[in-house]
Each structure stands twice: as structure tokens, then as C-alpha cells.
Amino acid sequence: MYKELLSAVAIALTFIAFSPYIHSVLQGKTRPHVFSWLIWGSTTFVVFLAQLADRGGAGAWPIGVSGIITLYVAFLAYTKKSDISITRIDWLFLFLAMTSLPLWYLTSDPLWAVVILTTVDLMGFGPTFRKAYIRPDEEQLTFFMLVALRNLIVIVALVHYSLTTVLFPAVTGAACLIFILMVVYRRRILASP
Image (cartoon, rainbow, N blue to C red; front, top):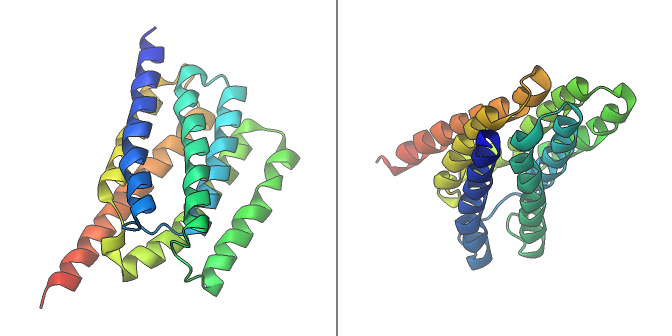
């Protein structure tokens, strides 16, 4: 019961994090990079399936919900033409991400799936880091803070602890914290005379 409650809290945090972000995208205030969100959505949902295969239980549920919502943000980014400044390096990140996904099928091991997909998910940060470095005011840091907190709760809510179940939420949570620090730093640099 305790794990299910924590999972419900993590799912609620997922909705709390995404709601203002999606609202801001719809208003045109936040301009997410479509490639990052496509990579994140697809990898997050496949990691959810791998966590279920390794008995992650209730702790995996928020990851599945997050994967679906993240794919929706990718859809919004595409339809709203949020960030159409796609560079060669962005195409490289997308290519690497999409060619890495079939490796899960070849390995037939949830651990390797999570290792591969966590790596791919981090590659998904590439276009967003590049864009946020140049235009740090176009990102909502509250979203990334809530995702980092949600991932900590996800880890506590897991029924079975293994590298397979813990790696993805731990690494993506840490990536969110690094992203926040980079954006805060860039905002200060750009604001100083």
C-alpha cells in the first residue's frame, strides 16, 4: 500500500509538472525542442515496459504516465512549430536515439534496454541543452525541478530495486538538476552588463 501511495504521489507530481508546461507551450511562452521531446517520450515509455519486465511494480507507473505525456508535448512542439531551429547536431542526436532503440530488441534483457534507453534519453537532452544555452529564458525550471523530485519519489516507490529499475529515474533526475544549474548560470551571465 505504501509503494502504491508513493506511486500516486509521483503520478500527481507528473501532472503538476506537465500542466503548466503544456499550458505555457499552448500560449507560445515555452518553445520545447521537438526532437528532445520525441526522444524523451519514446525512451521513457520503453523504459517503463522494461521496468515492468523487471518487477518494478507501482514505481514504474509514473514513468509510463510520463512517457505518454512527454509524447504529447512532442506533438505540441511539432504542431505549434515551437522550435524550428533544427541543426545538424540535432539530427545526429535524433538519429543516434532512433538507431539505439532497436538494440533493446536484440539484447532481450531489461537491464541492457534500460542502459541503452537511458543513454538515448540523455542524448535527447542535447538539442534542449543547446537551445537553452542560447535562449535560457524559454525554459521553465519549475518543470525540471518537479521532474527531478518525481524521479526521487519513483525510486522510493519501486517494489524491486535493481540497476534495471533505478538507473533511468536516477540518471534523468540528475540530468534535470544539471540542466537547471546550466540555465540559472546562463540567465545570470546574460543578465549581467
